[in-house]
Image 1: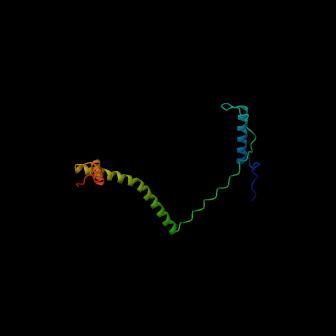
Image 2: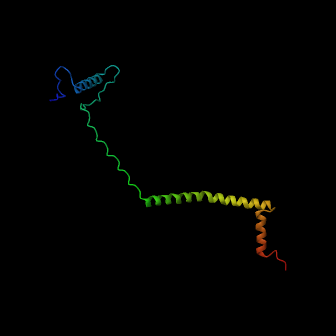
Image 3: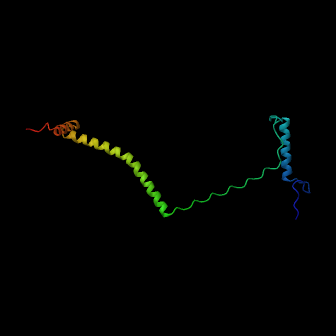
Length: 133
């Protein structure tokens, strides 16, 4: 079986899709160049090839990542846990210190004294001012 040449008309008067497309494209370019109604004059149209550009080859699929060994997974878990503990420490330690300060202050207030009175009493004991001869 011999296929008809796409550049020549097929016997029986039928035209190929390429001829039909080429005629439409040339008519459109002439209309633009002449300034058809509703169209701007297109002096900037250059001669372009009438055949469509060849298709680009599809990009190669990405290479799948290699599975981690059990040692690498364990190392990642440990690293994440250490990072989590570090961040948690930076958040919790100041909260604990402030809570201890409030607890000491509240306990001393409940006993009827204050932190400054306790510090003064300690200074007096250290200096030996409270001892009787």
